[in-house]
Image 1: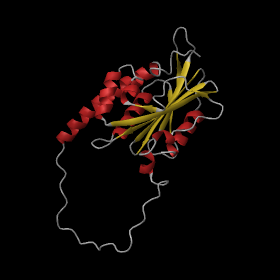
Image 2: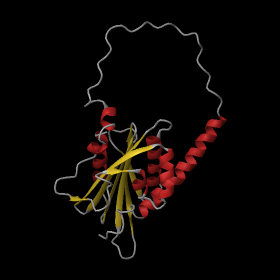
Image 3: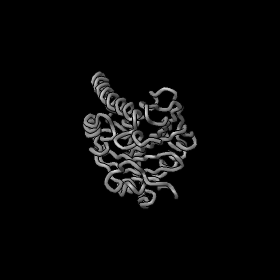
Length: 241
């Protein structure tokens, strides 16, 4: 398979579609949200007179151990939550950042209009991103975890909505919910991208979020990516968040 598409600066024409849908969707969604909010009546406050509830007694529950506290895990080394490269798989042949870390400029460089993506993600309180990937059995796998500060906006939820919208907008696409998640979804594109001088390129992708972290998975190959392949990757990655 040629090495001019599916990695490097982006994800081929798939990235252009996703990037354009993401940027336009984010801008449109934000504007719509402001207009809707401005037109709403203020939510009435509850009455001040409330029944007096009995005070809880006894010892407070012990804090969760670090192994069970999701916030402790995601505030640590985000790279440790990425799926490990399968035994025998080759290294990724596209940039995965500085030792697995990607800053906003590096991440935005995946898209055809990086300046627009940079500005949008900065407004959505991008915090950091971790990436990994590999080449195995003729397929290229790219996984990223993108974390948001979420001090003023629910950046993770917002961006997954638009990433999923971009995937669903492509023709000849099948999709399935990722088991065990309330929002994860996987997509397989049945139509290969074709370009003179390159072999046909098939792709699949999956997106989901948990807390302040977004999961992005993309798989490329010269043959159609199976439903089992993309769902298995997505399910196992979401289990780690």
